[in-house]
Image 1 (spheres, helix red, strand yellow):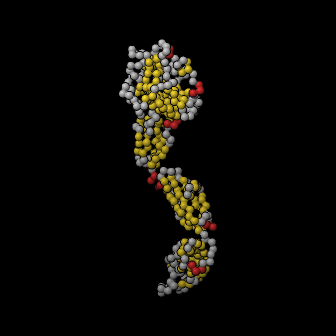
Image 2 (cartoon, rainbow, N blue to C red):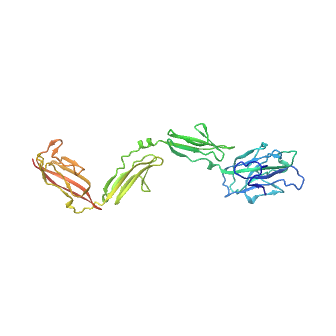
Image 3 (cartoon, rainbow, N blue to C red):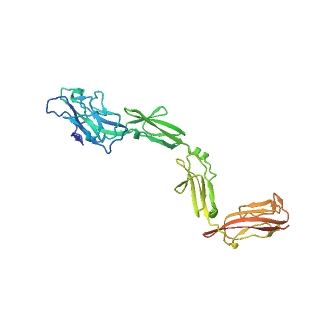
Length: 401
């Protein structure tokens, strides 16, 4: 079971397939005369037992031109507790084996796919074929099949198929050709490395594995964010202040692949806001980022006597003399929101405003209103330092001509 290991290779040895070291092993000895050692094995304990699924194994071998060459360079996955030897021969049915004589003087890969039973905990390289069944080419120099091994690998086949992914137009996808993989995209072979995707769409890639053929497919979805943004309804999220005790309902429209968040919390449907302070809502696309956002400020609008904050005149005379020509609500505190409606004696609305600086000039639908008594309804929210309060009321104003 002991094999030589060469860290820094002497000049007489082949250059490693990769790295700075390689292993060597006696695979077979064609001279049956005792006491020849006919077999050596390379054993690699696995980190965990295999699962009952498909695996890919491979190793590279360098055959020397003056040595015996066999068709029995083999890989075995086994349970270490079940190893059985007959003299020097480990009796087992290998999972991989070469099927023809290999060229000498160069590195050659032996690999393939196989189904694991599910309890294998060791990978073993060697010749598991009895002497009388070993197929070999003899030489005039010696009887020993002594060759070199490098880059032993084992993969779960399912893990070699990339997951579906999504890109933005103009981004690139890296096709990883390690682990002996290759790819076909839209009917054409793909070289390894990055590929830029300019056109939106869904692309299907086929994954191939040396000696095993096709092992799976995955999709690359390319998104155009300008299209995503244009399809998104950004009218739903509008920053506003509201009275927390009255609550505010915000309807979050359903949009493909768009999610809504308050902070880190995912929300959907109709959202009811009733807390004091600011709540920020974000509409987020997984690849295009934040599509829209709004800040909703919950205010304490409890009824508080603040008569000094505004003044409403009870009469005005729109006669052009420059004195009391307009009906104007005069606020002394910082106005958060404002709403004023004025009606005539028959209940017809003659004026409406959401701006405290917008005053009534005494006109109704483009014509001068008649003298008389008019009724107003008023709602104002003030912010006085850190406190916020709302006042509502109604009353009469006399229009004098």
